[in-house]
Structures are given as C-alpha cells and as structure tokens.
Length: 348
Image 1 (cartoon, helix red, strand yellow):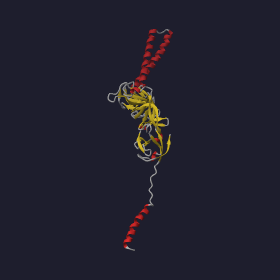
Image 2: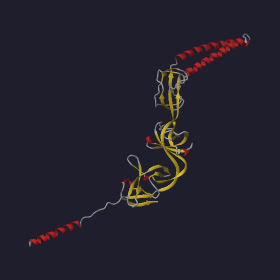
Image 3: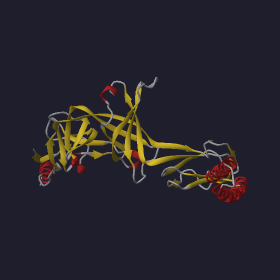
Image 4: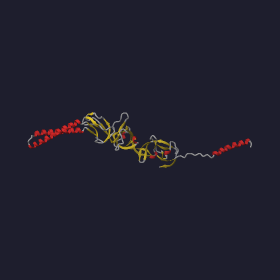
C-alpha cells in the first residue's frame, strides 16, 4: 500500500473509533428526592406576650427562737428538705430546766398547802382574807411554772412548713437573742416565675391570666400557671415591670434561681402561621427551622423560624413564615439548603 494512502486511512479511522467509543457512554442525572409539602395555614390565635425571668420561692420564712441562749444542736444544712414540725435547732436548756424543776417543786408545796387550808376554810376555821392569800400564791406559782415550761419548749426550733433549708444564719455554739433569725426555709410546693414585662405590654397583663412557663434547664419542659402579682412601678433602667406567675410544684422539680421563659395569654387575637409538627426540624444547637419551597417549585431553602406553642395538633410559628409559603412536611430529613426536590404529594 502507498505510504501516503496508509496515513490517510489511519487519520480517518481514529476519529471514527473515538466516535464509536463515545457512543457507548451514558450520562445519568441524579433523581431529585421525593417530598410531601403543604401550604402554611394562617389562623387567629390568642395573643400572648413572650417574656423571660427566673424562678423564685413562693414562700420564704426566717425562723428564730422565742427565748435566748446558746445553740446546742443544729443538725440540718442548706439544701436539705424538711417537713413541718421537724426539729431545726435546739438551745442548751440546762438552766431553764433547773429553774422549772424548782418552780414545779414550789408549786407542789403551795398546792398541798392550798388543799389543807381549803378544808379549814370550808369549816369556817379560816378567814376569807387568809384563804385569798393562799389562792393568790397558788395562781402565781402556777403561772411561773407555765412560763418556764413554755421557755423550755421554745428551746427547740421546729419548721413551720414543708420546704428546703435555704440559709443557716448562725452556727452551733452561737449565743442568740430572742427573735434573731437562725434558719431560712423556702416552700417548694408552690413556685413563682418572676418575669420582666416591657412597659409597652404591661397594660395588657392582668391578675389571673393564664401563662405557660418553659424551663430550659429541664429540657424545655412546660408548666402551666397564672399571673399572681404585678409590680406597680417599673424598674428605672430597664423600664420593665416585675410580674409573678404562680406554678404548682408538687414533685419539687422547680428550683428558685432557674431561668424561665414565659408566654402570658392576654386579651385579643393575633394571626399566626401554623404547620404540622413534623415540618419543624432543629439544628444541632437546638434552633428550629423548616424547608420552604422556592418560587421555582423545584428546590427548597432552609428557613429559620420562631415557634410559639401548639394550637391543637399544629405548631404555631410566630416568625419566619408568611401566608402562601409552602413547606416540606415529609422527606425533609434528606434535604439541605438549596436541594432540588420532586413533589410527590401536596397535602391540603
């Protein structure tokens, strides 16, 4: 074969070979994940004010002895639970018990003398004046003995309520005066959430209104309560009013000083978006979001939202969604911001 002809044949064969090889390739496009969507519902919900604060003790009492003396025993420590009537501390009652023994012995002597003179008086052998003197002495002896009995009894300090020891004001061996605070007890069966309400909202708050209190330290657990107090004067710097919400705490899980988030139900209604609960996802930091359909109808965007509670089986979204928005309610766990999707079902 002519050398030039051979070269031409090679050059022609190579492109044909490449074309033939290219024809065997197949390009596969990824299939968009199927999702279920629903349009956001807009409903009228009771108006609520969202505020924050801390838990406070419902009742705190400072207890002290009614008599003075040196503290002999003080067995309880801060944080310990106590029951009503439980002993909190005792005084050294040695001197008082000695005085009581003397007074009771004297009382016994006077009672015996009173009995003897009573028989004489009944027979007319004793004047009314003389009998009156022994009766006065008997009354005085009885009073003295009763006073000392009370003083001895008051050397034992007992709790006046069920609660927790919040403070020990003194220690064992301290000499205390009557009425000096020795122990502080807080009741824990009823707790108050003290929240700060802005001056722009305080006019809508009233005693008895229902409130929902969330405790972040308890994993967002919710507790129901009512407004029990409204401070009449605003704080100078923050221009907020202290409002207290009463919460029953029979299990004792609520502790004073814990951060609280509250929603106070006030008069009136507000229009809010609602979505099914499964539409709400959370970031690793715990921030809620949804996947909202983009305007092209084929892709989604991740939308941060603010959740405001439940309305029946629906979740109220106070921020982040508007009327007409369409959110993914099924299949969203496989998505990311900007994912292309295939809508297989649209729930009405």
